[in-house]
Length: 237
Image (tube, rainbow, N blue to C red; front, side, top):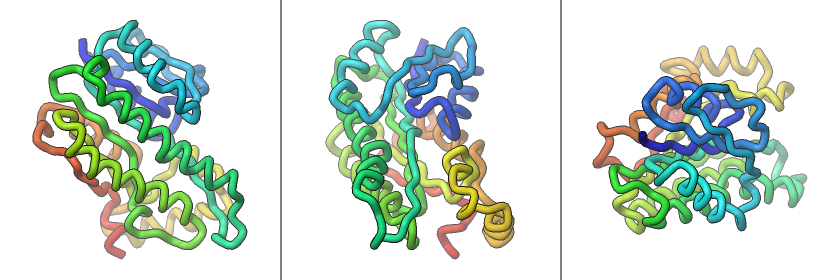
C-alpha cells in the first residue's frame, strides 16, 4: 500500500484531500494539531503535531516510516493568513506566517529528501502556494512573501532533490476556514463580486484537490519544479 502524508489535514484543502485519498488504495497519514477534526476511516491514520516545531520534524518523519513504511507523497497544505498594513504589522504575526507557510514546508521537504524516508517509486512533494505570490496586494504582503518563498523553494529543490518531484499549486481566492476568520475583509459581498468578475468563477477547494491528486499521480511523472495556477483566470485581471 502506498503512503501519502497530508500536513494540515484538519481543515480546508488538507481535510478535503484526506477525504479524497481515503477513497483510494492509499494509506493516509493525516497530520494536524486538532486530530479530532480528521475524518475517521480505516485507512486514515491521524498524527497530532504542531508544524511550527521544526526541530521535531525529522523525528516525526522517521517515526512515520517506522510505523507505516516509506512515503510516496507529501502534500503540505498547512497555512495561515495575516491581514494588516505594512506600517502596522506586528513582528510575531509575520514570523508566524513564515513559520507555518514556508519554514515548516522547507523542513518537511528536507526531511523527505532522505533515502530512508521517500519511496523509490515516483516520490512527490506538493505544496500549496497562492496567486498572491506573483500578484501581491496591500494588506497581505507577509502572506504573499511567504508564498513567493515557497515558489522559489519549489523551483530550486526540483533540481537538487531529483528523483523527488516537487511542485506547487497556486489557487486563487477560495473560501476556507482560514478566510472565514476574516469576515470583515472577506465579506459575502466581496466573495460574490470576486466570483462574478473571475473569468471561470472563483476557485473551489475541490479544484485544488484534483490538481494535487494529478501532480502526485502516475500521469505527472515528468512534471517537477512547476507552479500551477488553479485560479479561474483571476491572476489575469
